[in-house]
Amino acid sequence: MAKDIRYIQLNANTKKNDGIREKMQLKTSKTEITHIFIAWLAISVAFTILLSGWNSLSLDSIFIISAVTVGCAFILHELAHKVVAQKYGAWSEFRMVPFMLLVAIATAFMGFIFAAPGAVMISAPYLTREESGNIAIAGPMMNVALAFAFIPLTFCSGMAEQIGDFGVMINAWLAAFNMIPVGVLDGKKVFAWDRRVYGAALCIVIIVLVMSMMI
Image 1 (cartoon, rainbow, N blue to C red):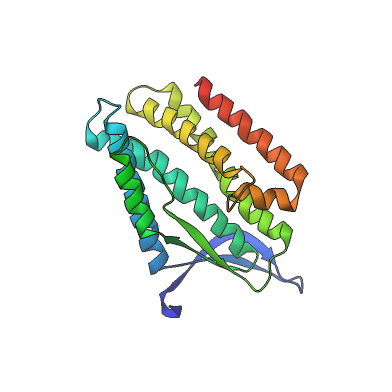
Image 2: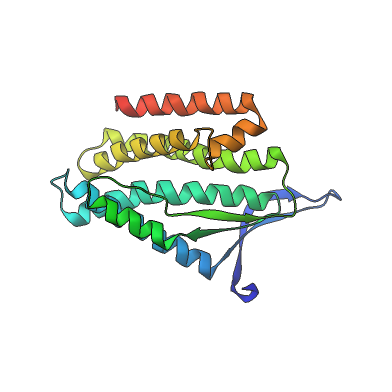
């Protein structure tokens, strides 16, 4: 696995304990890249199957819409967790769950989707509650940012408009779902860390969710 690791230089700087600054490195691997690609492809196919029954567009057009919106929403959500975890010195890589990818595709034929393509695996000797909270909140906030990024496309026409509408909607709902403070969802870790931060983040997510319903 060691030979499999690649290092991508980022512009951001991190400060060492001795005060010396060095460039932060985002670590990935061929295994992770493969898992990300397969998960992105599978979730895009699943939503293509689902949306094909509701839309008169061609399958290739629906696939493009799904890949750009849903695929990015799920994958970038997970990668946001990864980046923040590595900022704290933790090992973190995305791993798909093959069975759940099959479930997503199978349920799409039934008119709904149960989507849990995978998750970022995190390993560290110790993470504080604040660090865990920051890692958790990064995912929903990524979806909030993506929702805003898709808004300009809603003023276009044709496929671009559909990408914008669906991009805003799926990211708003994904952020809202993950902020529920139960089980393994991100909201539980954020709530356990700081209720004020949780409340502020939840307000932002609700505003985005309401906004998505008005577009």
